[in-house]
Length: 253
Image 1 (cartoon, rainbow, N blue to C red):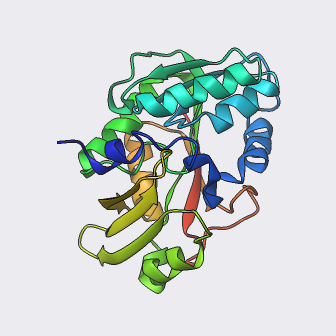
Image 2 (tube, rainbow, N blue to C red):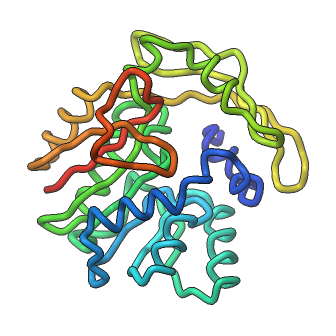
């Protein structure tokens, strides 16, 4: 039986790109460029790249990017978009828990919950971090966003998601946040690229900053910085608070 994140992306590329949370690509790539010092010689791995929006934008700016995703349909969509822009981007169907790369990339990005933290167990989420870390060079850097576990302690996830919905976007109902596991369970309703309405029972893991720090320290990252993740406006000046739905993590080996 397919997991919800596999079923979701079977035929959901074009409509995915219309979701409100995909609108921050340019600003997010600005942040990435700044973090890598505008060094065009480095190799970037985009994990859970989806339809390739960050990979394609960074390639347009002159960077060498490889995008990987579990969804064959999403990778096909990414390839079509790159071809339409006359760009040569390497897109591969890969499971982030078992990447075939070792010491190959200078930077890895996982944005908008690309792979992490969608897995059904904490062990699988950790396997993603381990696999990505192994793909990085000795002094490599990882930049990723994940759900902020401080948010649901002070706010209703259900109310927040309801307030972000725009016409045509996916909707969420029957949210239940489990304090013992820090997982939010919900029913997600969306329309696939052929206009069919589908419902999926989903769950995602929220992490508190100390968990992320411990996980990355266990993988021998030397510096770990965590910030608030504002859509399309990532900044080291944004201290993480209970108002941030996502956190931005930047760690260096």
